Amino acid sequence: MARSRVLQASVKGKLETDFDTYLQRENLTDAEAVRDLLSFALRIKLNDSDDDRPSNRELLEEMYRRIRQTQGTVNLDYTQGFDGEAFYRNKPEANEMRNAVTADVNNKVDEYLEGKKKG
Image 1 (cartoon, one colour):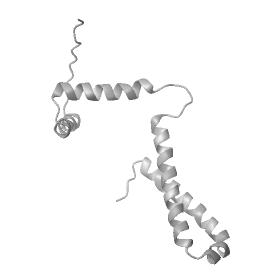
Image 2: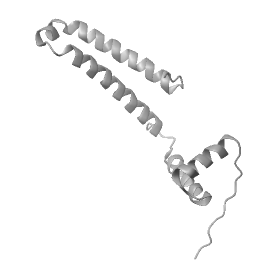
Image 3: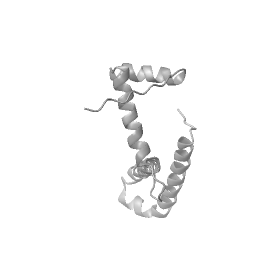
Image 4: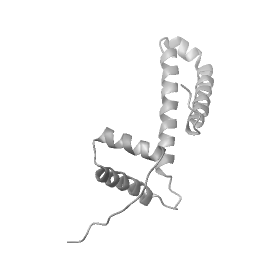
């Protein structure tokens, strides 16, 4: 039976506070938490590659952007869709509005992803 590898690292400041919060939230021992977090971090880091495929973050950002665009467009369509005659009469303006909503969502998502979170 192979010996377990023992790793040592000191933590202080925000990292220590975050680690303590994780321990309490997950109800783990120090060793269990380190194994859990190390396993999670290695799965992420080892799946990083230098090829042209999008990263997990890029995929999640694109999914978030599309969900917000869909939400904005559906809300707009819903509010304009009660009257079929009015819908077709206002279709060109609705397309312009939909494009404006999409542009607005893109700007807000970009700001959010850059860390400019608004309450």
